[in-house]
Image (cartoon, rainbow, N blue to C red):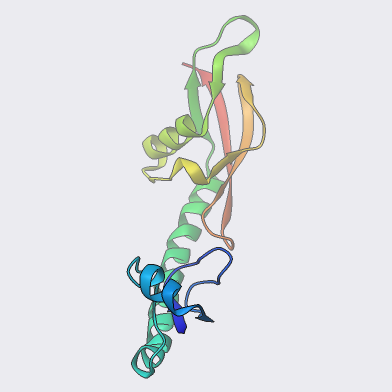
Amino acid sequence: MQVILLQDKENLGSKHELVTVKPGYGRNYLIPQKIAIVANETNLAKLDSIKEKEEAKRQERLDVYRNIAQKLGATVIKVGAKSGTGGKIFGSVTDIQLAQAIKEQLDEDIDRKIIELTEEVKTLGAYTASAKFDKEVIANINFEVVED
């Protein structure tokens, strides 16, 4: 049985790929779970238009991501933290705190899961993190941990 995948499926294929599966697997799992559709003439004809629409949406998202990345690269984000003697902060700065600081200062809502801290932030000072919006758009985030 041939099906068109509607999403990436590990060990099977990627989105919009035409794959051959056993009939029971396709009929009883992939199709009811909306992971795939039957590869008949109608659906194969629609596949090209679906790909074009999704590519257009992806390009729009990439433009938005590039604008946000440009904003992030141009500014230094200030993250407040309570510190003790010698500039050592209580606890550490996390991606959650960095995402909240970006929301407050730049008014951009960034998912904390795409932010990657290159090192543990346990003292006051300047640091760099990265935000991976897409495989094509990765932004460097310069931030400074200051006394709260």
